[in-house]
Image 1 (cartoon, helix red, strand yellow):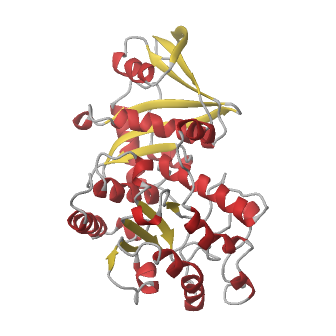
Image 2 (cartoon, one colour):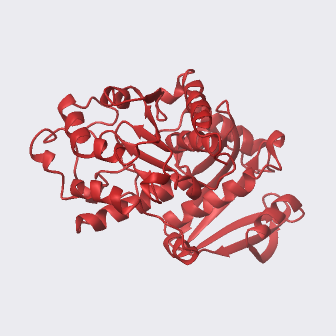
Image 3 (tube, helix red, strand yellow):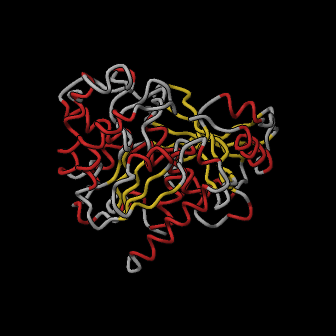
Length: 366
């Protein structure tokens, strides 16, 4: 998913005004690389940003954790740093590093709080400042989750519904032949779902999107038994959602945080199931998907998923999902969380309506 120039300009402005830089950021520089993580306020304005880039096969550099002054002391900086570390894990890094100007007490405190240790101090000839390099050894995400007993996979009942899609799905010999994509080594497999960690009866919110877009550059899947491929896909999607890699993920998080305020992301996913109404990518991202394909996917997979959550609020995000769910009972419509639909001025109010209905339907949830 592509970042808009407006967002890139906001990121550049925030980084330039909140840091003492020798080379200022520009929107063009921001757009050149997919290495910026942001936090948005309720209106979609960028109020936090950080740059994360791989500099060695084992090491990532975290640059300029920046928060709008009006939103400081709200945990945004810590959240950005955690997301940057998760992105570093996805990139295969074992070490993260940052360089902080000596005397920048706020930044020094943030990084020390999260386990960073100063390793060297020297003079930056470009800025004429003394700087200290801080480093932290990362535990791989899967090892970290296992050590904490954190669940990363959907419940076995959900996996049983989805596993047949990885054989691959028989519909690739009929309705989906030449229309949808199956190429695991290029990232094209059924994907996009997350959550449902606990028993299906615990799920209170189901978010149904259209179909997955193009895979990320690092998104590739090995061939293997269907159940094994499914698990790999679920782990990748989970870490991508945690890192809020783009507007799609950030807008999903906006809805989740509104429905479950103050709840940690993985705890939210014990109460939420996120899926697609069509599981595979179309030949062209955002292009038309034949009605026969939508019918196949609904008959084989979508209805079986929804039947596991009879008491949950089901939300159809975007026109395609709404069309495919038009005969399903009691579905809440809302605008897509992905571009271009998410850029419509009506989008955020529609997500707020979802949050309002959910909080009304489940007033006793924390």
